[in-house]
Image (cartoon, rainbow, N blue to C red; front, side):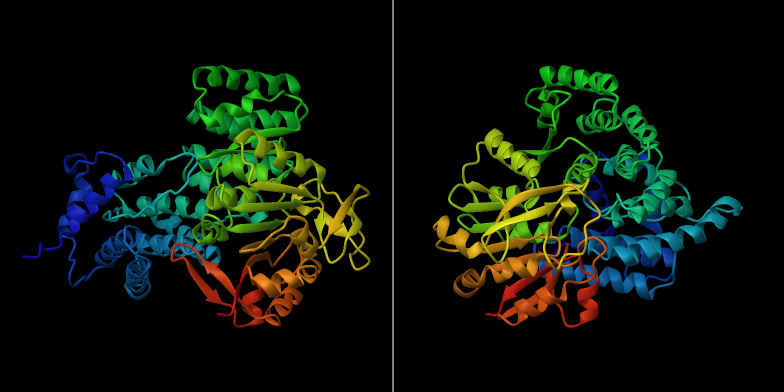
Length: 524
């Protein structure tokens, strides 16, 4: 006989899955909310919200992607078509952030928050609390999910619950937390969740990346909230280095060295083994490797990995899911190797990864990452992929991620700092390295992508690799020439939808124009 589905039991199971020991007697408001909800034929706005929460939980814990999509569609339908409640609006923003729709997530979160300000501060009567869903925190640098959930569920007011949930949505929904919109979002999120070490850490790093020294305030606050976390202490160390205060930087370095002596098995403290004047530092990566990065918040990679512990691009999920042992991968514009070493972990010692990087500082980082992790199936190729063999000039910027090759077609660079670098076609590299296959090709060449592809005609014709390329670089618009080049050679273009792990076909110039990265798949 089939056991009857129990909505309250399912929710308690979800709460304990988060990692805390939740007992009904400790949360009387929650018990009332669960017992008073009309599940099968919801009537009130709160009934609909609570049903949507159960659907979101089922989506998260589904055994397959088809079931996940079914439950997510169910939650979306409930939230969009039911009487609106502040918690429903907050959960709609959560849903959009899950599937990578940062624009809708931020828009709903901002407008809902503004609508909450009046009732939360003036209403004589509180709104009955409801059920809340917090997304699973994958690769979160600091796990605060259980603490935040407890704070939300102990509230006796749905308005206050919604405000706390919106704080979580806001800082999750803006992946580029180091730009002007990200700063605005984080400043708002820290007002809603001032006790969050994660938000204070990110806000501190983001301010410093934008040369705003008040970022130190948030880093010190993060350390007060979580005194002995390696990433927070590393952030303070790097901040004082950038501010040219070596004595204070050394203080944080020495503190970290003491922790490393106590906990040498903790990857997070390994960075303390560098000298205070060293141009590099180390960050844990993919829970397996130490990644060598530039020891400065001028580097976007350093900002992101120290601030979050993972990479922000949704396509990294696609990259990790599709790469298999034994594959051959070429990473053009490897920088310090975020995609390179994710690929190395997936293809394993039976595969190969070629990391192509022109900037000498990043080449040193790549080589040191190979050495310290004993990875001999990654080949670091110093130079720039292009449509010819020879030399070229590399225009250097404060953030190495923005370095670009200078050609006759390149607009005049806003820097006088250059490196002369080797350039070569990928076809010639294929012969030099005796490659018998290329399964994946990732290209991040700051506007030089067509030249890279033009020098890869044989690779494209013989191997038809899956291609992940940067579509929008800096302030440039969509890279339509690359799209046209690949479509003419039998590729179909997609953008990636995270969480549901779907490839969505690009069917218009408008779709192409607002996607940071594009995935090109050979027609089957």
